[in-house]
Length: 220
Image (cartoon, rainbow, N blue to C red):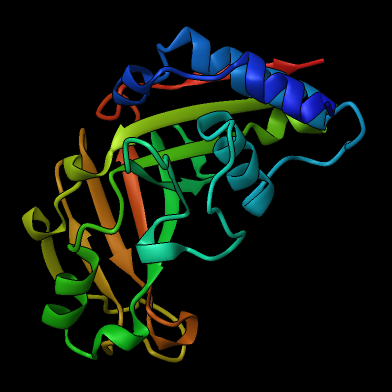
């Protein structure tokens, strides 16, 4: 039995654990910390992208799963095979009291704001799971990560006040560049959709208190 298999079996969850997935679930935190420690036993660079999806999936599905790296099945990155709870795994970047995440590309949703809003408002996943890095710590060679877990339904893009993005400088100054700004309450969330140059990508800014804060890991 490999070390990975050993940890998977040792940290196996019961079915009820999957309905209590939060940063306060000590069993989950220990499983992730063990995986991060194992990863950095041989890798000096930060964990991100598909490696984060893989580690999360191993913690959630210790007996195996249908996970495909980068597959983004049905808008989600990973899914627990017994409860069917789906997750989008992202890094995110903490800035002050907020965390910023990059989400869907809306280019193929249609050119209008109504079409884009309809697309981003679909149920793409049940929960977001973010593992952000503290760049200040990493510059000091401290391997730290911030874990955030929250239900996707606390973000309702239809409740934002959407308006065309009119740049104040650059070649498109004073003209609609194809992007949109979604303004919301500062203690909750806001969003923006970039212009065509980035495939109309969606960015979300969320207040940390609104999503229940974060858990910090420091890996030896």
